[in-house]
Image (cartoon, rainbow, N blue to C red; front, side, top):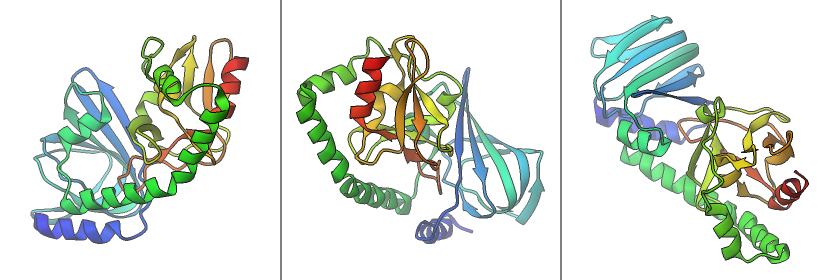
Length: 269
């Protein structure tokens, strides 16, 4: 298939229901590993800009090559030049891209790794616009929270962006919780893997310091998570319901809380 054919196939796929495709980000000295868990079906990969190594950890799939379809079963490894892949996944599979880079910000890594088609760019813009419109109730409820809080919006913003009490997200949550543009407001926290109701999404505060979970979780009138004390100086974000991870190449589901409940939890802690 030509790149144009793959772009058209991707465009059709974006219009159809997509399967769960959790992504786990691994960082090391001079290397980034992007682990994708694939469900059975057709997968059209994004266009890679850099040569990279592929590692298939588990599963079985058929990969379209210059010589036709090649069926491979884990364990498998190969080196790919820049370009796109298309595969038919026969059974649940784990595929890892290994890229040489010192980058640790997921947005910067994606810009370095991928050259998205115009179809993908337009689809993501449309999804963001739709999600932004749906999130108006969350922004309205946030305004009501501010009005009742005794603070001004500027005061809350100043407290939020203060970096003096910030620490990086600790492992293992640094592999599954990312900061990305939010349809609610600015940037938000997203989980790239599914989280069951009652499970910890990530820590929000450790030893009195805020993680990105405490800094970037946005407010919602109908939150999917809540803050919970977890010992002296520690607060964790806990799922109120099952939360989906990445689906069809998106960033995953945004994690939200009710700031009223979060403030009260912080006061008690």
